[in-house]
Image (cartoon, rainbow, N blue to C red):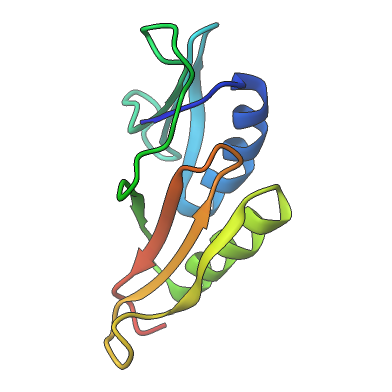
Length: 123
């Protein structure tokens, strides 16, 4: 779950971005939006929400949301699209640590939340 101060802007951003990791929107109200695996539309796995306490949403320093993908191509698409639709890069796609097999990409959404896509696949 990540917080937002602009549910509509977040919806536009995440509807597109989360397709790259196999998630789709299945729930929306005036307070939050829920996303589920494309194959299983009954269980929400990720929420975007306005804070319940009515205060402004903020990102956590050191907090990160990570999505496991099947391929390096998905990680790269996630990063490229994330930047195109208003995010900022926090780390280009690549192995981490250098020479390891796990392949990561990091972006920040328009509200500063750090989002990662990664895979253990060599392809």
